Image 1 (cartoon, rainbow, N blue to C red):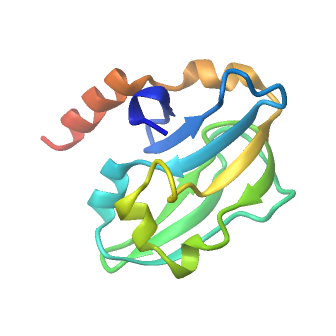
Image 2 (cartoon, helix red, strand yellow; image 1 turned 90 degrees about the horizontal axis):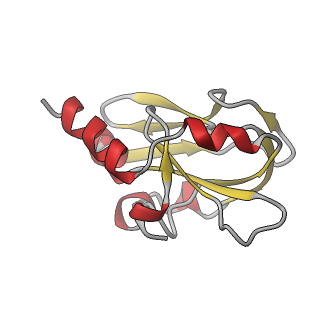
Length: 132
């Protein structure tokens, strides 16, 4: 996935929904900006498959040597798959946050949530403000 094709939440999660996907399956992850800000990741708690989530609800947490941070669902729906290899190979988050570092796949229950998310340019502007 290319970062330019994704939608982003203000809390630094990204979403990818292929246009041709009839099931409206969203792949979720955390951005490279978030991974870099956390530094030295040591633990990741994944959501449970089957969990129903609302937009903005906590999906899990990521722990670094600096802090423990929740990550949130940028969309509403049912968690249908998680990247079960990720907790044992956290380097994937830093090396390929938009590919092998995906966290969960959610079957959307409300596609309008995507409209509230930022495109790549708007997200880049948000990150630039936060670095000041």
